[in-house]
Image (cartoon, rainbow, N blue to C red; front, top):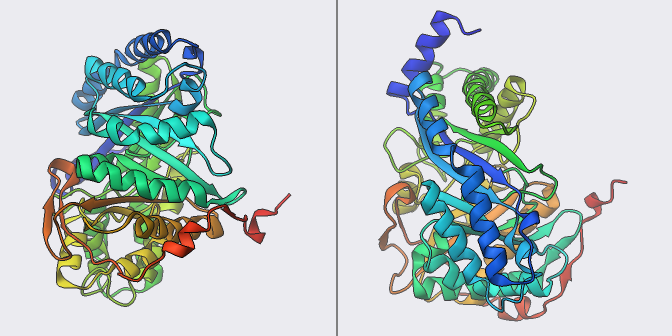
Length: 448
């Protein structure tokens, strides 16, 4: 039960500190939609998504009214499409993306994730067809999101796949840079992540599951404003206690949504996912800790403390915490991060160092449009290696912007925000990327 003071505190968090349910995501298994005929497979996919998700929006809106908690995004994730489409006779998987997009429009959701492939150890013909279909699939649909898992701690790093993804990202940006905002390259991708663009419904999941993502950078910042000058011990404890309260609210919404829809409750993902709105920034939390700006010396240590305390508080509040759960550092989606880049305080190299201890990785990073595919592949390889060696999820969502150079601003709009184009090293990595093959799994992977 919630006490009256706790209820009042939650109301204050919602009204003044931008607390919200960032996403409620319904995961749907599509393995029973496999068919050798492309048309038959797509008909099954469309019908199942529409049938399973038809009540998602009404239930989410009911919960918003009853609990007074904003639910910003309503989403669906599906079984990685490469696994479903591989049995079909389709040469291009664009029709599968179009069917998913129509289903998403029919049920009224914001995004649908799962146009995905898992290629950490090798690439099948179905994986290849899906990857080659990404540029058109993401630029010719409005709601479909894509992810490719190119590495894991157990399998190592598939450098052939990374080389291919550098080319795919470049091709996508040349059609429409916005398409790159819907594409994530992963290491150690979780099967229950509710956040886009990386969400998919893993093969270890049941038929349907409700996963909720909770966010609250403004709440964390407000909490630590009251303890300025206190020790790191007190700082960590305050963040942990605040994260506990936020996660408990998310668990309530997730369980209620699952019960009303008749599906399993999956996980609560407590990720401090910022938005371009003032007062909803992870970078401003770092500044409240005592840094002049994000990227200043000490930033990596600050992110490490923040991420750890958030996870500890979340795990105390729910037995089912999953997804990514920690601090996101997307440049364009966080006004404080974008400002730090503008000031010259945050470079690509420093951001990469900070991602070693945060939840995801190089996220919503705009780079000059003439950045080569090989350089993009090398940037991906660097970030992915952090995840593989440290047994954590890392990801890259990088956006080459044609016609733009370092320092110029690019507008993505809405929750995607705006950011300066970041400078990229002009030193070549072409010979390194051209080697191909796999980087073997690290010694830390041998735990059996």
